[in-house]
Image (cartoon, rainbow, N blue to C red; front, side, top):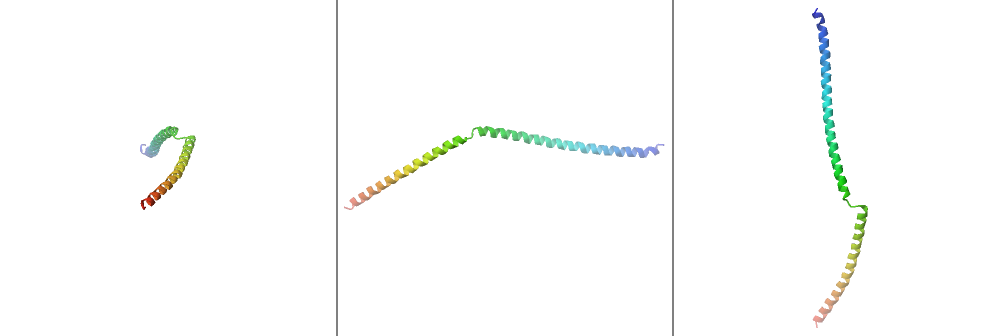
Amino acid sequence: MMQSYSWVMDVVQSIGMVVLGWYGWMMKKEMADAALLRAMQEDLMQTKQELALLKREATHAPTHQDLGELHNRMNDLSGAVRELVGVMSGVQRSLDRVETKLMNEGNR
């Protein structure tokens, strides 16, 4: 009688092995998914920290108005330099005349 049920035990063992194999595969998959989720959470936290840092830095950045004022000041400075170049050209001409006069008087 025991031998007649041995095939039933074989079927039950086979089904049990399949169920255990499937359960192990599912657990491994869940563990891999959990590890991936942890890594994604860490990346998200790092990104949030970097974004907060960028926001803090952006508050100290010059505004459009600041850049406009700086541009105006640079234009004023450029005009002043052009004016100085003109004045220095006049001084150069005067020095050339003085030098020419001194050289001509030195030959007498």
